[in-house]
Image (cartoon, rainbow, N blue to C red; front, side, top):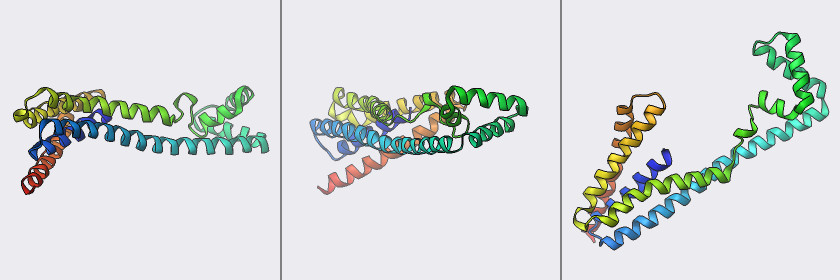
Length: 211
């Protein structure tokens, strides 16, 4: 949702700003495509760096845990017992659970219950980067398609109207999924999108008139 919202807002704002500068429709489309590519790459790079940092932290934690298990297996067993006791198990049962889990896979047991690292939820930087770029691109395609199909004279108005409609719908859907009020989500996202487009329109009109 967030990536698609970013794609709609940034690309629609760019298109509206360039259109306000009295640029030809072909120039508006070129700017929109450039904005899509640049935005998708920016999202991918930012997401990759962020998730890569998280993955590095997880790997460092796991390496430290391996060393601790090799150096003091008995102490790590006691630590796991205490974790289970704190979670509500009786001491005898906690000891049995810790023993069984450490026999099966000691590192996985400590990673999950001490560090909060689950293999299925490990940070995957490349996948996160691709997903971020893809969702941004999907959102950016909407204002680009409108700019391609609508006559130059109506371009800015139609891009704004369709983009705000989609933003409001996505905001309402995200709020509904999260258990919040859809109307509040729609208004929140719509207002920020309208503000972004208004500012870029003003900037484009100002610099277009000066040129």
